[in-house]
Each structure stands twice: as structure tokens, then as C-alpha cells.
Image 1 (cartoon, rainbow, N blue to C red):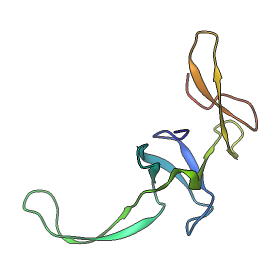
Image 2 (image 1 turned 90 degrees about the vertical axis):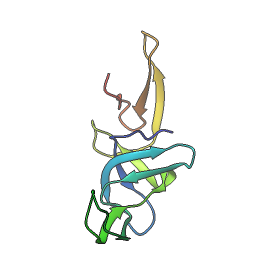
Image 3 (image 1 turned 120 degrees about the vertical axis):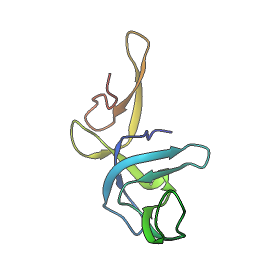
Amino acid sequence: MKVKKGDLVRVISGKDKGKEGKVLRVMPKLNKIIVENVNIVKKHQRPTQQLREGGIIEQPAPIYANKVMVVCPNCGKPTRVGYRVLEEGKKVRVCRKCNEIIDKV
């Protein structure tokens, strides 16, 4: 997947189009991700003895990874992701707009 945990992404389609958030969890086998403050659903939670009280809680639900674009930390625009191999042999993600490295090296 071209999206990793901790990336800043912008939603490009669906009911939350235009929202930005940080990726909290990546599920590559399902091609889904969980983004903070995006696709918020209400869950009816039964009270448990040790952990938490009951009630209606709001939590983010997974969305398809192809509905988001990575926001480049250098140019600040949503962009497609390319790859480049550095001299030391490390493969890094690259912004297709400004051609700068997205990954922290």
C-alpha cells in the first residue's frame, strides 16, 4: 500500500470528501484504512465490569484506501505517490508534484 500509518491524507470521494486526517490503522489485506475524524459511526456499547461504561460512543470506521490521497509534507498538496531507490539502496516514497521525498529518512 502507498499509504502508511501516521500519514496525513485527504479524502477525495464520499460523504467526507475534502476532510483531512492522520492515518490511525492500515489493513492491507482488505485495502482499507482508518483515518481520524473521518467516517465517524455511532456504536452502542454495553457496560463492562472492568473497562468502560455503556452508552453510545462515536468512533472512526474503515474506508477504502483508494478514496484518499497522501498530502505531501513539503508542498502541502494531495498527491499521488511514486517510488525512488536511494544510493544506499533504500526504497522511499516520492511526491509526484514536487518530486521530494515523503518518507522520513
